[in-house]
Structure formats: C-alpha cells, structure tokens
Image 1 (cartoon, rainbow, N blue to C red):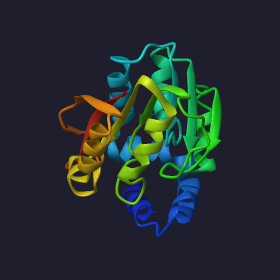
Image 2: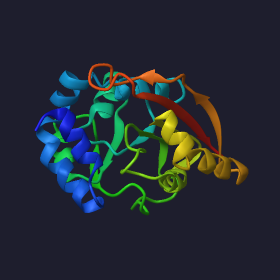
Image 3: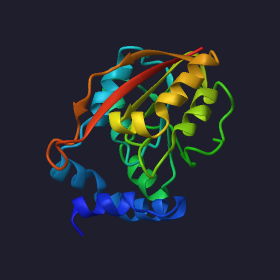
Image 4: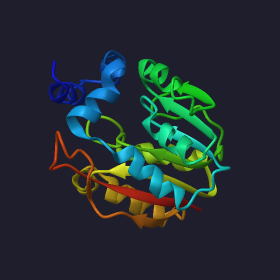
Amino acid sequence: MTSQNRVQWIYSSKDINELQERYDYWAAEYDSDLDRDFGWFAPQLAAEVLQRYVPTTARILDAGAGTGLVGKALKEMGYGSIVAMDLSTGMLEVAKKTEAYESFDQMVLGETLGYETDSFDAVISVGVFTVGHVPAGGLDDLVRVTKPGGFIVYSLRPDVYEENGFREKHAELEAAGKLSIVEVTEPVHVLPIGEPEVEHQVWVLRIS
C-alpha cells in the first residue's frame, strides 16, 4: 500500500477502534512516509508558533502526539516537560524513541481525558482535529485541562473550520468566557509534496 493510499485508508476508518488499529499498523513507517511522500512540516510550524507564547519551563500536553514529531521539535527548542497522549499505543511506542517526553498516556481525544483540571500550562495538537478523527467538541476537555492564562495551539484546515463546527465551537467558548483567540496564522501548504492543495492554519487560544 502506498503512503497516499494509506492516508485515505486512515481517513476511511469506520470507528475509533479501527482508527487506533490502523495507526498501530502504520506507526513504524509513519514518519518516513510523511516526510518522503508528503513533506509534512506542520509539527515544526506549530512548535514555532507555540514558542512565541509559552516559556520552556512550561508543562505541555501533546494531544494526539503520534510518533512524537511535535515533541521532537519542542525538545530541540529547549522544552523539557512534555506529556504525550495518543489513542494509538503503536504510535506512542515510536514516540518513546524521541526521548522528548516525560510520560505517555493512551487516551482518546474527544472523550473525557484522565487528567486533573488545570493540569497543563499549554496544549499543542497537530493534525488531530480533522475529518474522521476528533470533532470540534474535543476542544472542551483541552480547555478544562489547561490552566487559566495558558494556551492551546492547534492546527486546523480552513475548510474543516468552516464546515465541521469549529467556527461555532470557538464562538461558543468565547461567549462563555472560557478563552480568547490571540493568533490565527495565514493558511500554509503543509503537505507540499503529496497534497500540495491542502492548507492548515495554526490557532492560538488563550484560556481564561
């Protein structure tokens, strides 16, 4: 199976269990496939955005950490207290090899997470809030586990923002006084080799 077909195979998962199984299967080749066939650089982009707001002493949750590409980027920037959370144990096993994380938790983003309220100074989530993965409602629990004054930094396709409830979820959370939007990057082509038409933006949400 080519990596292009594998991406479509992932997106066609019929439920969360199948999604987990397919990511487990892909874990060993995930990084090389995305680098060679897609040129995926959103993890580095999002880490650079987070760096503008979050000190290196912060405790950070990498929500949907996958193989640890975000953690690797943050580690190179001097961050040392990062928790990896992902639904796939196979992906987390690969993430352990980065030596970027202090702990690893198998949890499902979109469900209630097993963390105390106000556990993290910041949350970063890249390539996770998308079709067939985590819906807009998954933001609710990330807001809960982030300390007041902390930040959620996450990537989102502009079309998904408009069509899949994220515009409405942001408005709902703002109206409830739970957060404010402090930055939205311009759309960037983050898969220049394999899917050059796909754009992502990085959103920065400050928790109230």
